[in-house]
Length: 494
Image 1 (cartoon, rainbow, N blue to C red):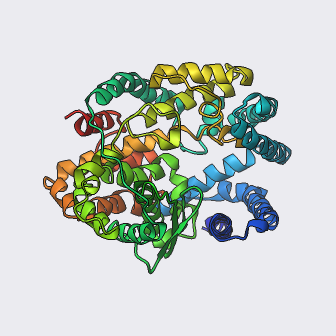
Image 2 (image 1 turned 180 degrees about the horizontal axis):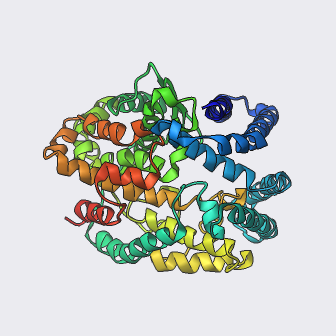
């Protein structure tokens, strides 16, 4: 047991430092003075180098080799499994290559910001080529250490244990389904009445706080703030979420709150006794599982007719517009379920969104595997977009320059966005089958029927199981796209 205790002590310290890193990152996005960026960058650099050194210490490898798993409980064994995964990824790449990648992605991201504003891919093309060369080296080093194909070695960092071969099957299925379904929905849908703003930001803030509490966030252990891009961080009794406000459309803030509450509840209800260890960190389950929590609230619940039947009176009272037809439950429901062929991923509806993700996955996998060169990216992007969405982007800003991910070296991340939506549909299908009056409960604002199921079947399990084991235990089925297709069909065509 001595080796295991040494691992617990070391990774307890690492977890505490990672939580500090998350906290100062939250402060950077929410409260830090504009000119504090230089000092904050230095602080985060020193902190993360220290974390890396502690995690890659050869002593960690010695302790892992010495651990007798037969002496450990199931939770301790799972903790060792996560530590092994973290150690393998951290030690797979030489420190010199890590430094080169960090330096190049900083350069590339800075130029990308200018290229995006000017809608000119050529401005960043050379820097992205240099970064992609390093990413390929990075992938090769990881592939050798982890004994995985090139792309899988990167993908495993975001979705542990899952392979691109599995993703290909799932995405080929959904990719074949969406184009025809999108046509059918757009031919049938009825337009919503336009919202009549402005909707004051202070009123929206109060409404969003109320919604967060309806969904299960309590002020004693959480807070809601504004940021340029909504996000969530924290653990246990310190959970922080953000949203952003648009005076013309308050539903943007409401949907973001529902989404981030899903993430926040996950971090709140992971097992308290394991908060100081890797097995108790929700992110170590992978981003697909994390997104499944946020999308269960954002897409499955907060875009449902029942949700808006409950929420519409609160919206009307908040803005002093009782009886306003554009704020009726039916019109608000139509507003948040409008389907379109938009170019921007982060503004896409739930029907088109997976297509945005699938095309990015296919392109980045080809780039990592040297089957697509950077100079050919804009044309490849436009061709794939037209095939899946049905239109061609008119310029680079609305095309291959819109996302930051590749320009900051984050290859392998994109699939998790869509996988989370498929899992959310599978969870809610299971809950509905087990709860005959589920829709009536949602209409009455009894959202704990949903959130309690997620807490008991996903959040409280921490990293006790692998992601796909967790899904099968929770739903009784292996991960399947059939539930997502069923969900879309019932909501948009029934």
